[in-house]
Length: 262
Image (cartoon, rainbow, N blue to C red; front, side):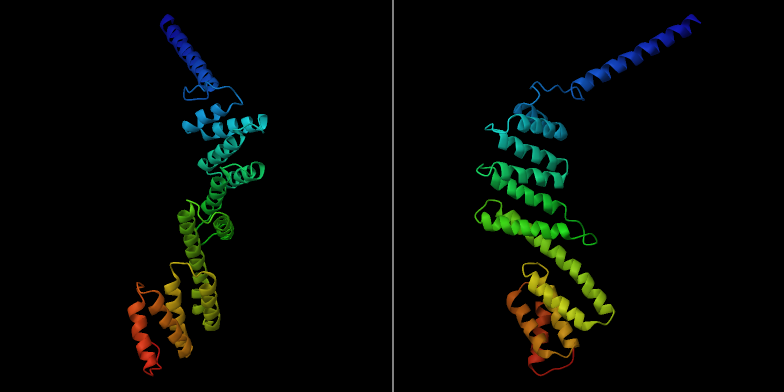
């Protein structure tokens, strides 16, 4: 009986020690990390940010901005808060925080960076083609505004790349409708859809394929003039296209008086 009592007392002591340790960790922010900077200070947010504690960082920067709205570091704190939300993949919230920086601190040198990262927030919300493409249009509109306001920005290469990716996504989305119309035999709808893609998405890396499809469709519709125009455009503007050789052959056939589709 004494032996069992001793074991029970030992287990109780271990349990109490565990509770004390948990309380200590909770008081220091978990994982044994203690932030030495006072609540509401800018350095407190930086401390958490550098350690990957993004929610704590966002909260700390929020406290600093709320208590010191006119401080020289207020814009930087607002910027870092938004970046913390980006790290948390809270993109809609981060976009709003970047907007606040531009509105509340319009003369800050961080505005350009904030505008760029706001665009990234929209871009990162762009899903696969099966999903709603509204964020893709929002991202593109934002990038167009950014390019107009900061044409010489160091971010422009990334902006152009993002815009092409968005354009490619939208083209793939619309080509799904084209394939559906084709299966249903609605060739006029196919032609109209391809023409709209060519007009709306000229910067897409998929345009050469769209031109090829339009040329082939023109032959099916017994419209050699349009077919020739499309093949000529493909050969002239896209020398590296996988379709160029076939387009050249088709162009030679049609201009030589052939009428049958390839």
